[in-house]
Length: 288
Length: 318
Image (cartoon, rainbow over all chains, first blue to last red; front, side, top):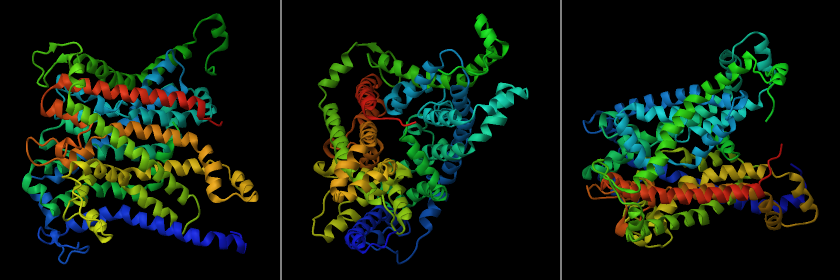
């Protein structure tokens, strides 16, 4: 910072104005979250008090208790199901997407470039376009209402998994060739080289990608909507959308808001803990 | 293609493969095999199968499909509901490009300096991006509520009378757009910030010496040098926006069997929502598949434009 007075004079009022604008915008961004939390702790009557009460007079935890104990909403189960799906998808990404990424980055075999183009091409093909044929296919496989449908395609690079492959490939390509040469001299086989020499080198990329896959899987709604209709197999997003089929619940704003809080809290915690990885992912996605 | 150091050069000259080379090919296929298989089964085949289904009168139950050639496509052209969905989706896309993208650029430009608590402010803008669309759409049902919603409450403070965001056909799309700006503006903001960081400071220093105003610097230095980022953001945002589905469905679904989430007078119907309803609510899988093909065609056009322009505009520095 220079202490040039003329610069200070020129910049100060503008900076203050910019700051006010940014803070006001931030308040706008946060308001729906605060409103959601506040509403989730009210009873059905006080929610309609106008002007809005930001801090409830009486805090009602019962809305959350209902979501965990009622026979209609079974959030413990939704959490469990979602956790299973998320963990296995992240695991699938670790194994299959990283193997493919390494193959594309470091091994030489016929048709490699064509196959890699195929992988990249899937990035332009959203699941929305494939809803109908995929539904038929899942029914043919007898995968409707199974976790297999929620886990296997994503683990094998379908539905956006290509992004993980692309990113990991970039990381592998940046590693020095000497690593493999040394491993080869030591008599390491190719899979051994991959698992014990190359994989540990891209740990940071894994951390960032694990969070990326976690976010995508936790928030996923469209795919579960198509392949799951048995409440025992519901994930959190489907559990929240369950409100849409129940007139009484749909106007029970406190309960609805409590369910939304339950859907948002895990991802927000992960975000606040690892936010630098989130931004990093995003910026990397812009470089493809 | 770089020659792999593993290739035994004498063997290569003789046109034979060393055992090591054979192994590498085998492992190469083994490493990429599972993923290629997954992509063919879960994306390649469904793409072709979707075209196939679209030429049939085919119910979602799957019994007795009847080949009708381009029948579904002819029906699409004459279906006022589909044309309306197409129009609504286009309005949404234009709205996002017109408001959300410039807003994210503005925020990025404002954040591109040292600010007290700048990082925390930035995180605030990014927070909605990472959240679950279903959950925040539920919140926005409440935010946009005519009588008790906070949006109308704040608008009321500045004297604007209540707007029936979710019940008035006129306001359905603006409501979705406002929510989607809130949800997505941070995403493009971070991309723009990264783009701004890549512009060398010397240009600004030179302009400063020449006495160029901030506005002039922005127009003459920032915008031109940022154009690759802007193009990328513009086209990816366009592609993503054409796929809008969850917001409409959650914001406008009522608790009745007939409720489609398309809003009052179908004012919030979108291509994907309409295709979803056709397939999974009304059982016309063949007709829905034809709509998916149209959406696919739109996305392909945007992608090819992107590839063409990228060749001309984007320079990858080593």
